[in-house]
Image (cartoon, rainbow, N blue to C red):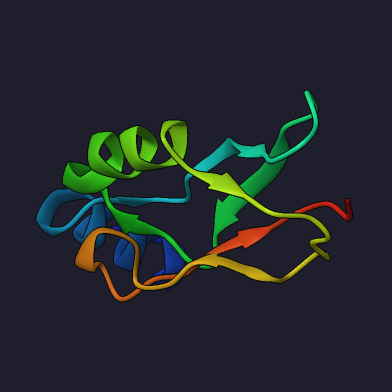
Length: 88
């Protein structure tokens, strides 16, 4: 009771029952020392973050890549894609 914002109430319920987070990271870019920044398209379950970051640490992609290109489809069975956040 006393919730002034319906969005806040929905967020609090989701945070207690199924917390989710966006994941950002870097993947290797073949043939260069420069990494490619990536992120999940939407938030994933908090319990899967370690799995996703471990996969990103062991992923190498071939250039060229553009912002929004899918780097990993359905990452770790979450139904969420990892996309590039920079052009290379």
